[in-house]
Amino acid sequence: MYVLEEKTYFYLLAIIPVIVLLFVVFQIWRKKTQRRFADAELLKKLSPETSTFKPLLKLLMLLLAFVALITALVNPKIGSKLETVKREGVDIVFAIDVSKSMLAEDITPNRLEKSKRLISSIIDQLAGDRIGIIAYAGEAFPQLPITTDYAAAKMFLQGMNTDMLSSQGTAIGEAINMATDYFNDEAQTNKILVVVSDGEDHQSSIESSLEALKQKGIRVVTIGVGTTKGGPIPIKKNGITETYKKDRQGEVVITHMNEETLRKIADNSEGAYMNGNNTAEVMDFMKDYLGNLDKKEYETKQFADYKSQFQWFLAAALLFLILDLLFLERKTSWLRKLNLFNEKSEG
Image (tube, rainbow, N blue to C red):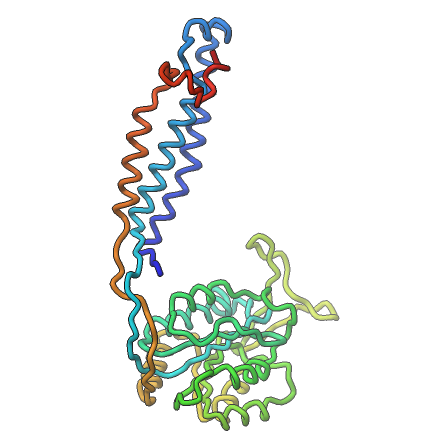
């Protein structure tokens, strides 16, 4: 198991195309400058030891050194020991609405992005709780099974979008039905389903789904995103809004947050409802709500004693830099017989 301590340094890799571009521009400029004084045949006779391959080799060494140095700054760490540790917590499954109505921008930046940020903030304040993720629109889809890997959960969370499910619409009941069998630990006394949605539901009834949850002791916390005033659903191309979703009569569709549905779900499952527009209030509520629940102790395996590996990449960077200095742009006479750089054909 490995971790990358400072991933932000990977952004420095964007400099590599700039270096390559500068190299190409320099080579073009040098050739144009040389041609002002002599033609190609004369230049070849005047400088017979000049290699056309060595500059590329030197550039490669420089780029490899740069990549190795950036990797050293990222500081990869390898877990050297697998330990069994005891933790305690509750099981939480997040059901996230990814229907098209979640693209409405009546809340900044839009309902779906707001939902993802809320869940990410909730995950950040968890300690020992196990989590899972379900995506739903016209149907439900298991996104992440119950786990203690918060980093993986946030990675899957960021990848969620309204195009991940082909069946559109909003069927909260489908997510509830899936959550009924999603919790894999029958001994867990506290199981929480957190539904993050704008409350629009295109199913006629969800009472039977809620009853199945109650029988398994699963409580539902609903978090509403959006406004009751609502907003249109933008249709974008390359991040630019081209038009808005329209109904069959050609009228722009306005989608509203339905708090009544979300409150009903929470009340019928002995749970709670929160308006998600204020992130701080949601965080305080979830902290208090989860803190008042009994925690179940369980065992899990995790890597410990992570050891930094940056020194190997730093050494590689120094080696490539040394090679870059050793490689001269003229042909290497003692390597002519090996012809490693195809120098015979050049001469």
